[in-house]
Image (spheres, one colour):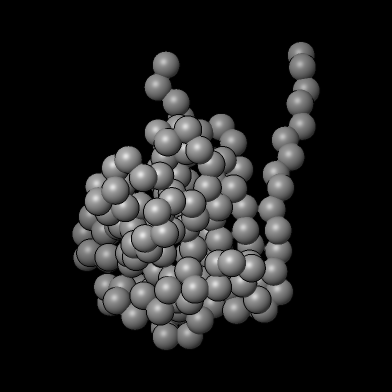
Length: 154
């Protein structure tokens, strides 16, 4: 039997945004106002920075038939890849408000969103930054670090 260790690198920012990403982070927080979250009250916004400098935003869209909704990250990423299929992604910022109040701790993507990010890394053969925003703590991590054993078609 072989034993291995997995190391995940990330950077923590206390009450600040990563340098160079301030505008992207503000866009993610601002777009939470567009979320359709009438059932949970948990509004999530995502802002994707394309390699050409374009910013594409998305929000969570809930549905009374719960699996029918969609997370902000996938809403933004699917639109970005549809509108700019050859461009590639530099970063995505994710923010949330719980019943109108910005969350203190950073918000993290669900497993399905992490798998989509892993697929985008493979698609463009380039990693990108994921910025998970909170009022008291924001984390910057590479997309490839979020789901170390992602699904890959054989």
